[in-house]
Image (tube, rainbow, N blue to C red; front, side, top):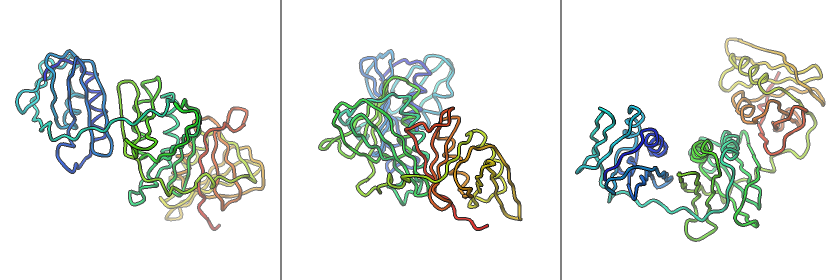
Length: 377
């Protein structure tokens, strides 16, 4: 194998592929990235039996072939190279990399020991890449991080006709985003539970590329239990989580509310951050709503206390409700609008944060439900 490639294209491809490699692989070859040159195309791929990543780059190929090298080491080296073309050649059991006057010799691993990458499932449809990336970011924030509850670490994707819905919950908050997409089958009705971290990393990478993202999801048979994403020259597949017993979380959203507050997102975000400085990790911030606006307060150890008043348009009976400050900040960051509406049933039932337009009306499509923390005053 011998080829020449642009430094930035190589660094981007290797960095993206190496990012999903395991820190402690079960077998050494899984820590590697596969470099394979065929007909002027370099394929860079990684696979850990859970997630596979592939990207193709145009190169000047002198000799076709393949080499397997440490992914993280190659990523660090390519990122540090000068902005000049890179010459790479496989020589015996080593990979030689030359860029300007910089020269590296890396040991290779046996190509024949590397597992075969899974095939992409059949295409289910396409969605705008930038809109998909934004939607995933809004939902993935609510996914759980406790690996002992694997079902909660996923994002549930529901494909029903031309509507794509995503939901995630860690039992203390719930995010739901609905958007339009272009299904290959207008009658499609299929659900999948995708690991949130993989989905977020993939969407974040594919979003800036522009264009469309293809969602590939098996309806049964070959490739079942997997999902694939393709955008530009990049391909990712991921094993699905078992979502057979995923709870009916949509029913958690209240059918009606008794009180409603309209706030400026940036203002509430700043106030909560300041007031929460005196709060312990488990201490809630208290939001007291009335006709006069909103007062945010918190108490911490050593009798440290903080409170701050801010403008808010409120309708309904006055109420005081407590929230985990980080969960509240996450929800405010995810709404993606300058204004938000907070809807309440009472101080002990879940509240819902929704994006709002300049006219104060709720913008449909996204909802973030947050459980209150009971407080005694």
